[in-house]
Amino acid sequence: MLTLVIGNKNYSSWSLRPWVYLAHHGIRFEERRIPLYVPGSHEALLEHAPTGLAPSLQDGDVRVWESIAILEYLAERFPATCGWPSDASARARARAISAEMHAGFRNLRQALPMNCRRVVPARDWPAEVQADIDRVAAIWTGCLEAQGADAGSFLFGAFGVADAMFAPVAFRFRTYSVALPPKARAYCGALLALPAMQSWLAGAVAETETMPKYDSV
Image (cartoon, rainbow, N blue to C red; front, side):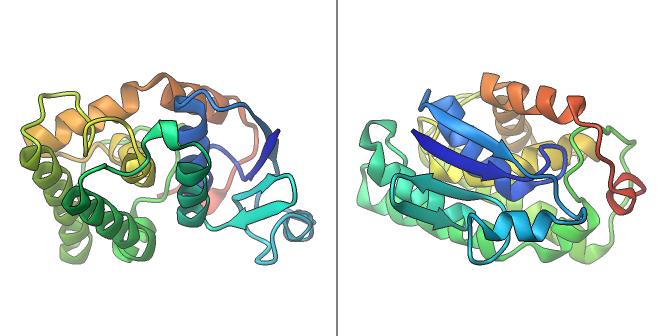
């Protein structure tokens, strides 16, 4: 059986990405949760990944770390999940926006840390943070319009790797009551409504660990 090593569900956006992909597609796996930023956590994570970071995946003798690499592996390992679009042009776009999410949006990450347990009033964001928010909304809207999607659809039809990469952003937007244009708002709602996302949220709410630097934002 697959083993997925994750951090705290309330805070670890990187861990959510492969977890929600596995859970949504009904792939059996063992979850091994290692709370982050506590004594011994780095050493415990080093037993599973050379980076000492979460998440990491073990599949027999195969070990994979980094969220986007795990998702690539899962899409290949379980082709029936259709992790990438079948159309070459759409597949290229899906890979591009997934890589952009993996490497970019630094201002959004810092200003809107993931904290599933909280919902705070809307606020005005610095220009650089709002630019990241606007870019995410533009990506979502552009993908949905390109396929003529109805409200509640995912970026390329069925839930795939690109959707998993953006899943933590949906929680961030929920926490910080971020206003979105209609199509982006509908997509965010579709992500949050997924049973797998609701299951993750329930796990996050049940956790007892706190991180003051995230809880005070």
